[in-house]
Image (cartoon, rainbow, N blue to C red; front, side, top):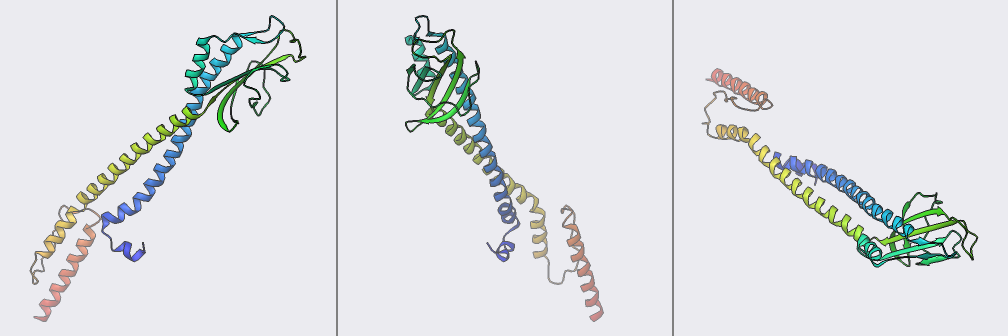
Length: 248
């Protein structure tokens, strides 16, 4: 919109056209921050579940026979499925990968693992986006067939439910902010209309005057910003009246 066309708009339209882009920018920034917070909250919630799954798997690992075995009862497996609300993977393996149980070649974390410190990270596994938790601890004794002294436990879940949660959260926030923005625009339009009502009365007062009426305009009840304008008009009316008196 050109500046000349903008200046021809009403004061209400000018205010709305100036404020709306600024408010849209603020709402957009708020939605970005909301999405970041939603992803962080979802990660924190799912990471707690992954941490519990890691501990449960570790509690069910057995190396008493010299080999590696896992007692994975039905309830524990069901817990894993409910945790992710989707596909679940797990892997228990020696640090050298010679002995492993579960899904082979689950992606390892980008940073080296520290003993007894769970690490959570995102990765892809056969084209599927996963959230993984990894945990390592020292073996009481090396397993037959592998000289590795450490055991790595991994649990992974697909991110479908996490993404759906974040998407729904952002959609609800966008709907809420859109309604708030609409309400603010309507309220602003009403407020401007009420604020400009004295000017409308002043315009009506001027239109109702006869051509020969040179009496000063009434400035009672007008906004403080308009009073100087009315004073200038009254001063001009007084000068015109004086000129007309001299001419008579």
